[in-house]
Structures are given as structure tokens and as C-alpha cells.
Length: 383
Image 1 (cartoon, rainbow, N blue to C red):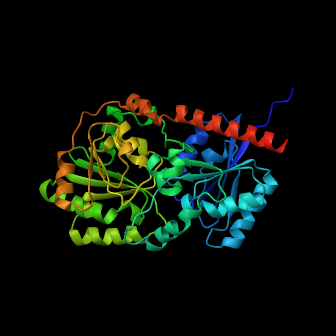
Image 2 (tube, rainbow, N blue to C red):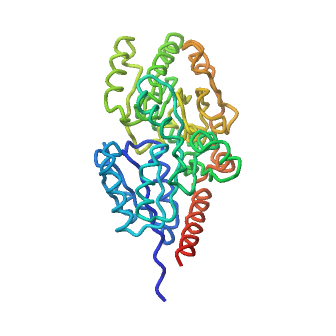
């Protein structure tokens, strides 16, 4: 008897930036039973980074396609891939822009078309065009999709609307992590702080790509206010370039020089050892203008870190008690006070995070079951 081929699901990621969405897809792929479900991925040919070898080694096919800004070529490329690959399921992670990729899948006759909401939208400086496009396309989010996913109820309601959510038609798939990997480890903490020269420092950490959404300039001003009252404070910035390219990081470095705190801010870039870098921190902060969930704060809580988050981060992201939400309208001095007062016993919170629904093995089993069910229903419909 010949074993059945795994279901191949085509994931649309757009421009690869090593952000939270990519991490979610990669985490799910590593954990899923690949004898039953295989992922293939389409990314923009202008992506600033490629798919990690650890992913392609697992059997993932990678397609490079024109960005959606070249719309006719974009739709043609996805339609061709769908037809040639004979995909039953396409899973688009492009939020409101998924209308375009799912239109291509519909034209190709793909029976299961998933729109996945990973974020919301804001009104921050620097993202006017991006957010305007989101708001314009949001009413069309369900035109070509016939399955709806979201990383949180908040993100689901923003993209798909209250009626669809209240009818139970949205599958909320938590942005799960390997909880054991992010569990607190005193040995790793000591080693990382020693390697980074942080033994006697109060370390404020932030993980997020350099884009207006993450609100780095506000973070910088809040940290500067903190440094005025705690001269042992250091800011760790971890993340790669976002949609704005290197412009934000360059402007940040200029502002850091103006404030005279160059020795207190450490840029670590996009890293593969983020789970270890959390251990070196004393407090984690995420002053985002908007978030669908805020995966980084789940990781930070798993490592036992106290967190200071903007009130634009969904409250469902709070798992531990030492998580504080602050309005962005609060002064930088008040943010500095919150950072300075943040404390908590550093211990292994991995079990608590897993029980809250963020364990990768449990979540991936749910995703696997959904794909299998969708594939079977597609087979029945075409029989």
C-alpha cells in the first residue's frame, strides 16, 4: 500500500521581513506533522531576506513572485502557481491585502481560501498610505475568502467584522511558541549578560522590526527619561528592517546621538537567538501603535519578564500578573517610571503560557486538524 501524499498548503507571505507573521508560519511548519501537511510559501521577489534553510530543508517549496503593487503580474503569478501546484488550500497572511491573493486563488479554482488577520491598523505617522489601504480594502476581506483565521478576537473583529465573529465563523489561532525554548534559564541569563557586557545594568528590552507601527521613537524618548533617573539603564533593540527599510534605524541612531546616549542603546539586529536574549533583559516593553496580538510579549512573559505595553496591544496578550498597559498619551516620564518600577520573580512560566493556549504543539494540532477537514470537504465537493 502506497502512503498518501501530504496535503500541500500554499502560504502567501508577501515581503519577507523576519517579523511576527513569518515566525508564526515557520513555527507552525516546524511543529506540524509533515507526513500529513506540507507548507509551500510564496514571497515577494523584492524581499529583503529569504526563507531560512531550516525551513526549505523540511520540504517547503518557495515561490518568488512580484509584489501586490504590481497587481496584474501578482495575480497572474499566484493563479499560475495555484494551477500548476493543484493546491486545494491557499492560506494568505496579507491581512486586508489578502483580497488580491485570494482573488487569484478563486480564479484558479482553489476550493479552500483562507484569509488570516494578524494585525489591525493605526494612525501613526509614517504609515498613512499603508493604513489607508488597509481601511479601503477591509470591506472586501470576505469577498474571495471562504475561511477566516485571526491571531486574536481583536484582530478578527477588526478585519472581518463583529457579525462574522459573533456567529463563530472565525478560527482564532493563537500565535504559539515553543514554550520550553523560551522558559527562564538563570545560566543562559548570566552567560548572555556577560557576553553583552551587561552584568551590572538594568536592561530594557524590545523586540520588533523597524517600522512605524512599533513606535521606536517614542520608546527612545521614554528610555531617555528613564536613563536620567537610572544611569545603569541600557536599551536592547532587537529586530530587522521593516517596510520602511533602513530609514527608521538611521534616524533613530541620529536621535540617539543628539540625546547623548549612544553607549546606552545596543542594536542587535535580526537574531536567531532571541529566546536567549530575553533572558538577559530585566523588563520588556512594546509601545506599539497597534498590534493584532503582540507575539513578542508572549515570548517575554514565558521567560518571566515584567512587561510594559501600550494600550493598543490587545488585553488578551496578558498572561502573567506583572504586565502593565499604558496609554501612549501618557508622558515619557510616566513610561519611564513604569519601566523603573517593573519587577517580578524570574522563574519558569512556560507551563502557565502553555495552559493559556500558546504552546506550539497543541496549537499546531488544531491547525493540522483544520487543514485535513478542509481538504476532505474540498474532495467531497469536487467528487
